[in-house]
Amino acid sequence: MAYKEKFTETDWAMVLEAPMLAGLAITAADPGGLIGAVQESAAMAGSLKDASAGSLAAEVAEAYKTSEGRSAAMDGVKALVKGKKPPEITEAAITRLSEILGTVKTTAPEEAGAFSEFLIDTATRTAEAAKEGGFLGFGGEAVSDAEKKTLADLQAALGGSAGV
Image 1: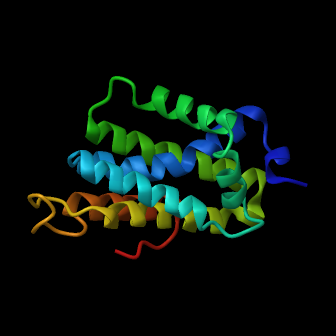
Image 2: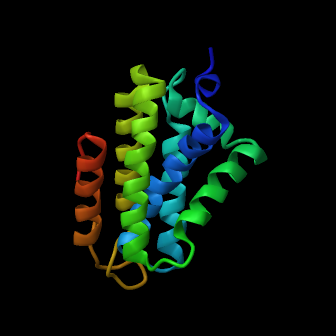
């Protein structure tokens, strides 16, 4: 049975939001310029591409290949961030990720640990993708203090380990 079949339509749409929210929590924690945002988006996409075959994360990655899957994820994320400032977006994303993981623990408990690690890995890759505080790619730091704090908050909310 595909993991998608275990979830209600509403819950599956929430699960699809998770990788975007993991990346968005980091991006909103320390917003950079356009190039940094593109690098961070590419890191999130790379995390999806590298999801372990047969896992819930891989099934989410497959869903992103369809317009329906991408739309379901984007609609939820847009509704969550509407009218919020970056710090509020980070907080809302972490809260929502915790709720999503709770749904995964209930519906597909065998995947909860791996999915949590996948989300933390996605956030870590996003944080490491672009230097913060530099000029034209020079100087700056690989992971800003705000991103480190957000990674720690995600780790606490999702019960995993952050590598930064």
